[in-house]
Length: 310
Ligand SMILES: [Mg+2]
Image (cartoon, rainbow, N blue to C red):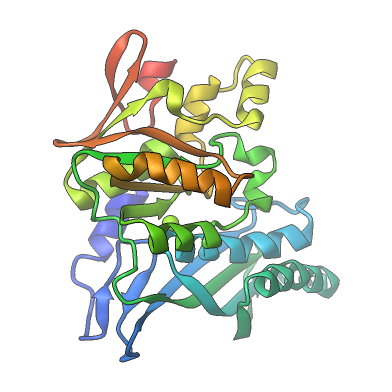
């Protein structure tokens, strides 16, 4: 059973109540707490030593990453973050100086985005450090962007460059909060999510939730410098285009909007966010799954992309 089968099993019959606007299955839960013009966003995320960072990772970067992941999910809903609760589980004898530095990294990012850290829990965990952060935020009523709104004919966009995140971006990425809110304020964004497990896998969540398929243009997928360098220097590494499709932890946004809005979006984006690339990588089509076009034609992209790029 893979992670997504397990999630599907666990979320089949969860308890609910009338406050739930959108439950499990999107980047954040959306709750109606009775505020006249805003809905609440609710999210939790965890990082674990050995998986998301190592003993060698600078502690400030561990703390920063632990918070940035959840902020990226708030961004994916076009929301604004408000407050966080931090649970930290420490192996016995863990250096309190290191814990202080973890908090320094987390606090600095929280201040940057106006996020209050309002409590949490300290506990123990044998062998591995674990940090779990619960976040609340909000979004104007009618402005939350879900995964389920993609329509055949939409253009598909991604921010930034993809692949090779393990070279450092996985610790230093910027949650695209301002960009996502700007998008939702000015355009009718049909579906959006943040990229945590690689485009080839993550885009399928939008396709499934929306009941559509996608056709991508291989040459339009923005490949990071890190992925190119790794492919060049290590012949055993994935080819760079495959890395861009399948490497995790990009924490960029993928979103769709009506293709008639695409040119205006590209023009205004360049003025507003000159430092951040925005790429139109393909379109939403009727059907299911991902087709990818290159010079040799159109291929069905397997779940993790390997077959067609090896
Ligand atoms: Mg997400």
